[in-house]
Length: 355
Image (cartoon, rainbow, N blue to C red):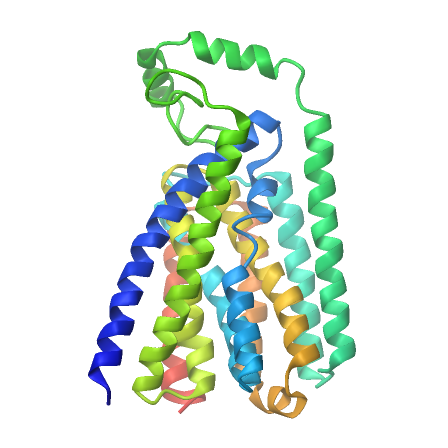
């Protein structure tokens, strides 16, 4: 066992965590501001940013190129489970009260449930192949177009009095803002930063500035996920973990750390829409584009042999629970229940199904 390599990878993992915290904070703050200035839902903005699992895609492509198709598939399945039971649950736990989700969140959660159900049916019937992969990639393209269209439509139909609203916000004092925040708890349309879009020197930043900061946070999130996944994979390999266990548990946990940080920060600041978009968008990305590429370019026999019904059952059940929670609303104790289910899944993976 090479302890020098293990210490190096551990240091990279810790550095990735700091980059992760920076990126999550930037992304959450400026997502809410951009959504407010454009007059569209925060959920839709987050679906195209944090909901894009670029670090997961990098891991999938690297695994396939190295001849580890089962690792790529295990990472996709494990990450989709971790996003709901591990990350979304943290957003519920840290939210200050009961969460009522908007219509955008409900629509894309329903879409995710149908995509998840389709994947489970394909997997159980052993219909894996390039045709199925091409269909999933096509679904991702349609999803991307639909989100972009809704955002474009939302920008065109933004409220006419949005400028006057901003002017009223400019004229309000910091004291009144603090009093209003005290009287009204954080809601879906409440800005994440007190005082609206003003900077420390009192001048309002432009929309372009906030978009640039949002992109900067998104890049930091993606880079941190890539660093965390590779360092965690190296550490797990040093301790002789199998590829399937690594993909479903350790690697998927590491690559979904950005989602967990975004969920915690979003939940703490009362933005339930971003919590849902972070989860729904990530899983749609995983189960369409990442899964499609895995089916098209991966080893078909290795993929078929690596599937376990237990993991497919957990994947579908977590998506069904996610749908029910978003449709009916949620409280903190539900987040705790999901965390217990996630820990139970990890224990079963290591002790029974992946022994």
